[in-house]
Length: 264
Image 1 (cartoon, rainbow, N blue to C red):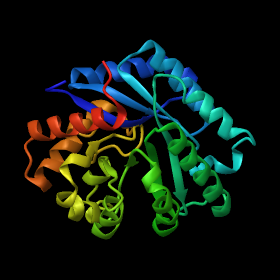
Image 2 (cartoon, one colour; image 1 turned 90 degrees about the vertical axis):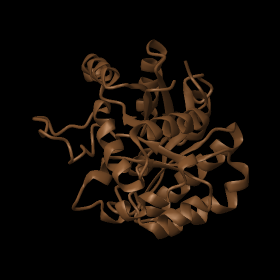
Image 3 (cartoon, helix red, strand yellow; image 1 turned 180 degrees about the horizontal axis):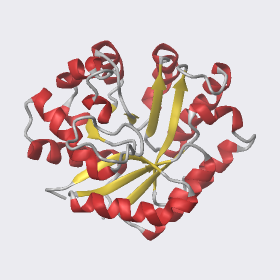
């Protein structure tokens, strides 16, 4: 897969946007972004992502419950996750973790639902696809005791500083970089940490339709992000790390294949 990019995280759109989503992925392919990890934030999204991936082998899927959705998790969510995870398109458990920035779900429920998903990932031997905002210490407190039982961790949409990076890399986490890096207002801490990311654990992702890179010129009329814009994130990362674009392409693609298991 030399000479292509992997978008290690974009969000599954609503059912009524499926046809438009197909066109979005085609625009991405025209920019050499040819592999996609579809993120699920709840069980319904997970099922739609799996159904989409069944028709498009360029896609693999995560299944999990986002901390924002934790309070809405059904009582049998663990069993449902285990059943969904049997599908061959499923390559990780998540997006899961803790988010104290908005607390759409109470923190105690977030911790319970997250801990259960950590156990599922360990039991099934799947990577854990992580979300975290303003909850680093509680997140680490859950992850550290389980780390030896987990095959891999991916810190989705990392936005932190060197201290947060050091804490995640101490757990041998893969680190996902998004358009946050291109934000001159909010991305300064991340820009300062970027050169310290282990190149063998570095991935690129858009988190589309969110986090439109602010270095796109001219600015798109639509404020929605899409995987075709992944190379703009790479351009900014190249400036900060000294890697060439071709080096970043090879590194991040290889890392994505290792983390999510190679797919055709």
